[in-house]
Length: 111
Length: 115
Image (tube, rainbow over all chains, first blue to last red; front, side, top):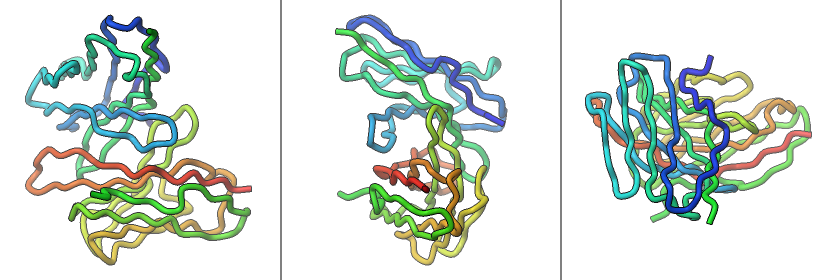
């Protein structure tokens, strides 16, 4: 049973425009949410996170929004750059400090 | 700073054979994890450990065993390998005390093929 879902397997965006990646979760006990970026043949690398007590966290071009009532979070990248092309995973922390991951969204930024 | 190191990077295993995937971290993290990633799927938690001597099952533990004799090392053992265990395996670690928020750091992965 997938507790963290990313319903868009892929997304293409023009360079300079905004990329919006979405993530939904089912477990209301999740207290910490993260986005990871993954290049081929490499491990995931941490990008940005948000605590469940906040609704927004910003770090440079990356902003994560959390809507707890809808159990939804999103990652905004603006402006998008070709180097942002990668697979993005949404993750949530449950009890026991376990991290649950979505299936990923492959972002392609077109120059 | 090495972070999380996994060996080997690639391996081909025959059905029924056994092997151990190695993972070590030099960040003094208390939590360590093993995930597998299948094509088009997210990362599924196999086993995790909250500290030396303590391990617990994740979402997909069948066919695997782990041990955590030191803070640094968290090997994953495959017994009687099956084609369904063909996957990319990621080891990760994190530090958590008192419920604080820290991310997990990942190794580069081990691509395992069972034939």
